[in-house]
Length: 624
Image (cartoon, rainbow, N blue to C red):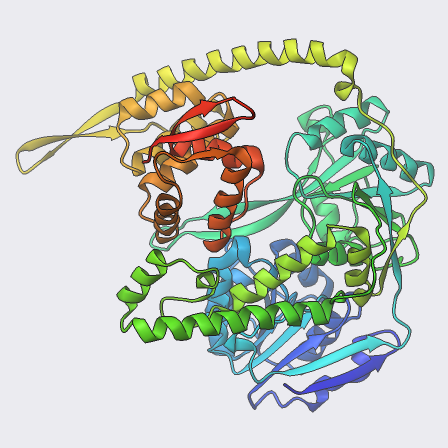
């Protein structure tokens, strides 16, 4: 892999490397240049001025609209198809296959082809397949993550850096209570005439709780940047899904009171609020020098790529120290082992590739067909099987994603290791000198008893409402009669379209999920009446029913592993259950569970007897 290095003072266009590319010939290049280095500016203007037919691909609809407005270049999405035939067009990853005849594609934020396969795998696989049709490919990224996938083979790497790199600082702030820490830092930013941008990946009850506290403190203009999956279905065409940014006014007192923050973000790259919350890290920019970033990890921690992306989101002021709320410790270790990003990634990736190749060689010797290989993968599960496709190819994207996740787990173990990784991106982790000791009133001991009483009342009321909704659903679930060939056939009708936020929609959705698994109405209704008022428990029940009944290959494999791992008569502690469950989940490329969740799933899957002598344990009476 050939690598060329360039330096520039202000913008990437100073290198003029595009002048050396012949857009009549085939080429594949990867441009590694820090965010705010002017990659989009240089590429789009070059293509536009020379009237080169190409498609420029970004990762969100919002960014496509921002670039379109900024450079006066048409964009294409499922609900904006008018400019399909334009010579130069901007679109999102989902639509890459539609433009293969152009033969030239530019993939912006190319690292997402690795870092997002955990939740966007099918779309990214479609992208990788479609790229085989293009003759000229330019990958762009400010946070490079590499893969040994065939699509990256034979490309030329261009590393472009500023002669004097932008230096940024990330100051850590210890906290006792995450919500309290967010409140304190919002007030701190306000005293310094800054708009705090709180990067919060958790979408739990934390957000409304914090917003309520901010309103009590006189902060009214609050915006929240989030994403939603927009599903578009047109007659005669398949369903299309696109992730779209949404920006809500969370401080407005009424519907007619709301500021159009989304329009501000798209057209002006700014939001005129007192506090901004964001649960999204990709695909938008905030211009101006009056913003102040706070990274609040919550239960879903940011990856190092998320941290870099968020810090580089604010391109016009690199001098202000961003903050990260943390309950990790700074433990200075000896510099033994591999710490910095490029070498740690290569080490982990190569290690996984070596193991996967060895495992594949073993399987090839004993399996002569695809079906036998599938059977072997089920019977003798190996930690490297997750990286081997049934077509006897190594899943290099899966290996790269695993290495990416392993680095991320490492950096959250202690701040010293996070510092080593971030240094690669010219980000220094430092002690901010701040510490949050604020604990919100609702968490204080004197309020716990009142909260418990209120929670019990709320719980009972919610259960009664849920039971009424379930009863109404089954009473109104009519059957239509259709006559065919002289005979009458009866089939259920699940009613008209219902608001997705309503309880009735939840009843219908869970009914459909369980019905497709082969459960009968009586059993479904019993499960709904027992658990539907507890969303978490209901989701666990559905997940366990899928493990038992689903025909999905991944779940079949996991089911086989569970039945081979846990035997009737075994008596296990909660820690033993958690360890074994997570071992199987990792093997099957699924997310690990926390201790309480693992034990809860175990008890839902297996019929057990509980013992409390010298610590709680569970004996398996019957498997499923």
